[in-house]
Image (cartoon, rainbow, N blue to C red; front, side, top):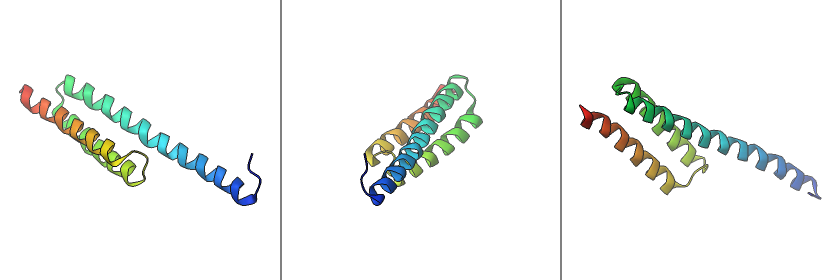
Length: 90
């Protein structure tokens, strides 16, 4: 239990930061699922739009330290591979 006023404030701030990080991580997972579904359905325009949003979300999450920089790079590489698969299937 927090004893000082500043510690109580930090508890509130940490909770808010945890929720923000969770929102970023959840959004990234959702966009990945949508991207995989679009690639499987061969919807090129939709897949490229989702890939653009996903890359942006990954960059924002890495900038806010919600995910590690290497994790962000790995995820962006995966996005690129999925989009390339779409072009290779044609």
